[in-house]
Image 1 (cartoon, rainbow over the protein chains, first blue to last red):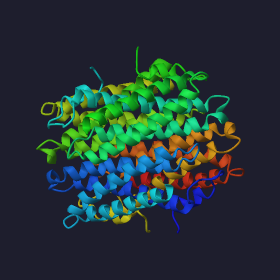
Image 2 (cartoon, each protein chain N blue to C red):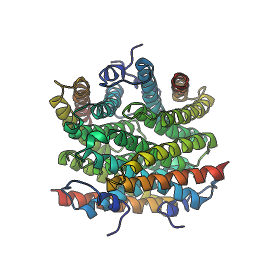
Image 3 (cartoon, rainbow over the protein chains, first blue to last red):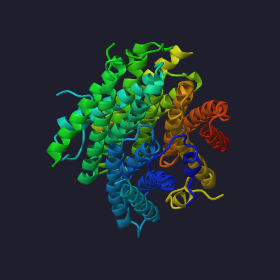
Length: 135
Length: 135
Length: 135
Length: 135
């Protein structure tokens, strides 16, 4: 598995109690999803029918904030607290599920929602896969 | 109860299915805690014994990111998704507990850790109080 | 001058080459503005005339992100790099001016835009006041 | 040029007054740099000689926050305000220069600083390239 975060993780000077390739893949999925949600919110704001997309915009903004924060927390291994990581991954998977469902409902009409829904699904799966090996 | 967020919340044009004063107090506690944790991380970096404070710094950075994101999510009420909010509040209370415990362990030696621990305790309580009225 | 950030700044273990009261006041103005802009964006999304407020929402989101980041950078004093701080304060003052102008244009119709415009004006002034004593 | 942000940008429903491939490349460079800086700060915290790396950690944290915020602002095109974008890109290039210089000074000893310095250089260049076509 090749990911953008992997070269940096390979340089980490101490042990990490998680599979590094899986961790890097999750961080990359989180960063991609945060970017897709930020862009989708703005694309929705540019649609003529923006009044019908306000729930989608709000969910996009929430998901972007939560994914960015989760990527940051997963990137810190010093004094690793599994309880914080686990509960945040749960919240993030919930946000990705919610945003993925909302975007999927508009995917037939708006291509940006289709791309964003795919990103949310991939990110939700990455969060749940990481949770599965943590417990 | 007077809080900095209250004047803005008072102008919200639609109904909010949470007590506005309690919501504003929680947002204010989250913002204060994010600020305290950001400052405490930097103060720890300035201590001569920084090598013994690396876990505290990491926990401070995690808590700051999670509190800022939770404040943002709580500030969005359109199409309110209780599942996302609830799971994020749980994660945030967990992070505040973890950071409050870590800072409390250094409170006798570092005044910034004492101030930060108090802020984390207050924020954890605010998150749990809001969770209690949501369910 | 009493501000929420002052108790924490008072505990900083090393010297800070800026007036602490002015620095704390700026950080507080930045945090308040970030919160006002986040809330105003969401309030705009709840207005029936949201289609006429998309520029305001976008400016609110930009200003919120920039103010939060500037508050964080100002809270870090170790190895203080004046060039970074100064250029970021310039960018932040520019964002606050832009958002304040846009919100002021809707202030007569939307109370949340009026409150947010006031917060942006105060934050722009705080950034420029701090810049003035840095040079 | 292929970048992760390009598929999403291709779906944007309105015109964008910037070259889309160049914009996508800049957003990707910003996201990569934010991630590298976040990871480098934590790797520095794990080094035995952390006391000599506190300036590097602080610069990493500043650069990560500024790059993430700049990526978000560049992802919003509605009502595009060139003054805000330009001043933020200037601040971001300054932060990347500062962090790149600091990390480069430790690159011989710490591989994570070498990888991070490269990411900062690439991001600084991307910001300046985009600024060059904006004016």
